[in-house]
Amino acid sequence: MQETLTAPAPARQVPAGLLYSLRIVVAAQAAALVVAASFAGQAVQSQGALGETHVMAGMVVHLVALVQIVLAVLVWRPGRGAGWPALASVGLLVVGMAQHFTWDTLGAHVPNGVVLFGLVTAVLVWAWSPRAARRR
Image (tube, rainbow, N blue to C red; front, top):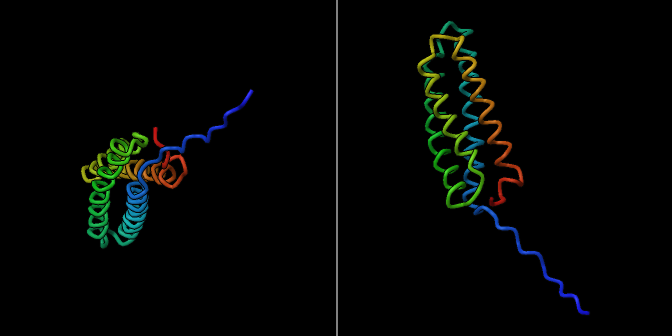
């Protein structure tokens, strides 16, 4: 009786360039949110003097969110990666846009900001984990 040993098939992975691009953009998104929150705190302390700076940082968050959506969809569809980060990225954009409509209502604006941090943290942790490279 002769046994035939075969090497396991190599695990198919999401294209490294796409995944690395998504990792960089998600890290930029997290940094932009930290900067926007910092300016928000300073605007509150200075009675609104840095309010426009906070708004401009929020615009950067929106622009990065658009790029993040594109990359997350590319990782998901042609890259055959997980799909939930694309949905979470759309959620980041939608909740971020809601921030513009709730700027004068801190009871909604602050919780929306917390949701933004939660979503970006979830995608950031996933993107830098080994699971992100695995195809589904």
